Length: 226
Image 1 (cartoon, rainbow, N blue to C red):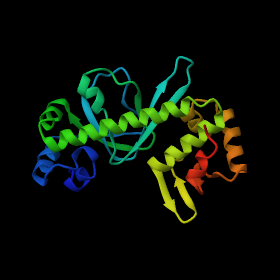
Image 2 (cartoon, rainbow, N blue to C red; image 1 turned 180 degrees about the horizontal axis):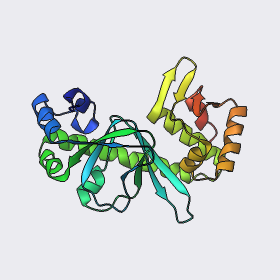
Image 3 (cartoon, rainbow, N blue to C red; image 1 turned 45 degrees about the vertical axis):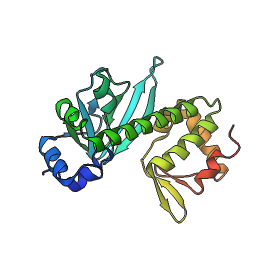
Image 4 (cartoon, one colour; image 1 turned 45 degrees about the horizontal axis):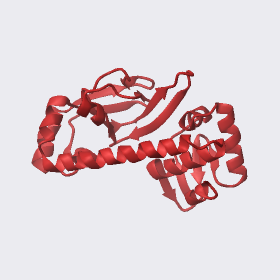
């Protein structure tokens, strides 16, 4: 199946390109498929491509010296990653793994550098990098919280904004997260995350249903936090 320009137009990096530029881009992209658990981009690999999720979902994580995994982000279609390592040629600070069967589109360094000479692409790239900085600040803010409940509340609020689906009863987070994955997002043990989640449920701040989470009022999650 070819890569259509309607999909490419939904990718933040390519949204400002003309139809002709998108058609040219579609011809040089390479598509790869990954199964659950397959590594898409290892931490030790230097920047070679920009990766765009076409189908499925991937997670970005780091393994801490303690042996615990810290989940930094999830990417769904049409999100992308790898552009920072491609810019400076350094290794990526995290490993990207498929958490669902995934199709990923690759843009290599040569064609990336050609696109850099396109003003609309360069402007979009700057906006993306600003967003990456804000995401990093948000993650640091979560990890700087001492109390597990505060970390979890802030993380759920962040997920509502990044992956939430607004419904009449609130915002649904449909990432199919286990308690261990929640723990790995906020940097605590699974047992600690489970206890914190139970307290949030008791306070009616969140409803857990089969690995999905309903947040009736996301703003309440941030109330009374320093």
